[in-house]
Length: 173
Image (tube, rainbow, N blue to C red; front, side, top):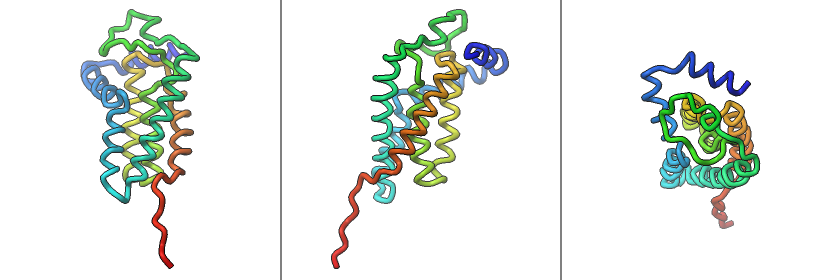
């Protein structure tokens, strides 16, 4: 079923315009750099500092659980390794496929931002969805890799966004 969905995307969505856009979108999610920058910006504002710390902490947890543990334990081959007939628009990744790290970091960040303020969260969710779709469009992840990244990202994002990393000042009485 995973391959049927990927081939359907290739057949119905692949075109010259998206061939230019999707690599840019996917690179925005590489190594979580876009989300790290966003979190870094939030650190400069006292009101949103805790949110920035939550994003960074969540992505660190996601890196450990998703990229270091699950990817290597499950060791799932990528679709582009199995079917080399699809024309690749980006370099072929060397690490395993499940879960999608791009989707994981994007989902963690989007959940944290959504719980902080919908004004931040809605654009983050849209961007996270685009990044996740780009991974299938570019034939480097199966839909179940994306789904696994989303589910784990929601769990980590929800958990970490309930944490307060900045101690509140004690009020003198």
